[in-house]
Image (cartoon, rainbow, N blue to C red; front, side):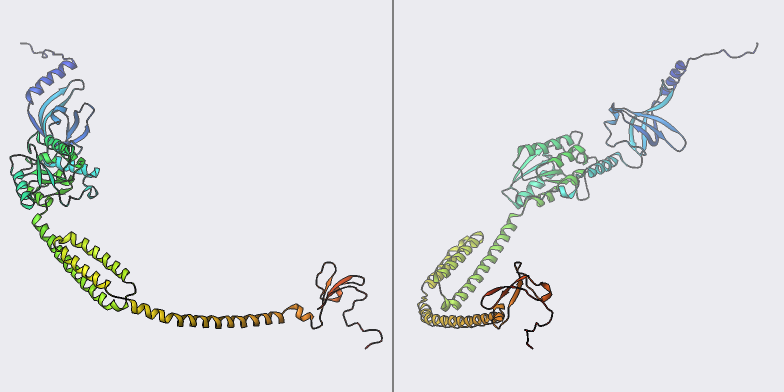
Length: 456
């Protein structure tokens, strides 16, 4: 035999890629792979495209929308993921990739991750804020309940509520509390009870169970319905250790359905006992007030000036007492009315004639004292006025002129002259005397005394 090269088999790129695809898909039709999610893209189609990587390698992955819709958690970059799927080759690029048919977070359950993700998102929206919480009504008369019609929750709620208040009305909107349809039913029931109207408060809940059993109360649709409710909502899901998203959104959380009924419904017997206690204390207070009133009337009996005004005050006080007694112990009102009426009659019998007579006797004396004081005051005022007139007269410039002085002013300006040098010979000056005025012509001026001819 003669040796030689093997026969040449020539493939096109497309043919080789297609052949690789057949071999890869048949050899790796069901594989498990784990890695970190990176380069996540979710276009409008809803399909998720991402890369799974570890410390040294990476592989492309695709999660189609139909598969991702069944997942309760959201993909995100950095998430450690465990995937089950099949390998295939994307022929246009010659890349191999894994088509993911199932995925779960590594190290934490998918439900727990979904819970934390939704909780963080709703908290960021402010749905858990305390400012949104509404107070429960003090005495509700009509309660709406959203729960299973066959579970222990509704029996516990009805039993506790009717024990505390037999007259309370409870309306059940029956729903499934677990399973795929439960979340939608619960949300619709909350909306229906709001549309129906007439409810004071809603209780939404169920008995205890696993995380999967309680999951409908962690769904976003239920949280949104609770937040949108116009009626206060009490969430009562599971046992004391169980917390759901609905608990955070509701106006109040109860650890169990029974506890929810206790929170919502007041104990009528306890309320009646408290009302009776308030009534007894009010009657005691009224009696104390009456005793004080009797004592005041007795002490002021001799000083009464206007019995009508006192009667009016007593009648007003009686009306106030009647109103207070009506709110507490109506059956005791007759005795109090009789006591107040006796008091009014007693006041009407008191005569103020002696006090009036005493006032008439003092009136002339007071009139005389008033006249005396007015006379003294007028005399003091007259003397003061005369002294002021005398002082004014002594200081008057006219009084100075009367002693031989005069006022000389330039004519016709009438400006006062204080020095001889202020005028010149020939000018006219005006002289004011104590009696009359002069117009004089200046013949001579001098800073010293002018002696008469031949005089000293």
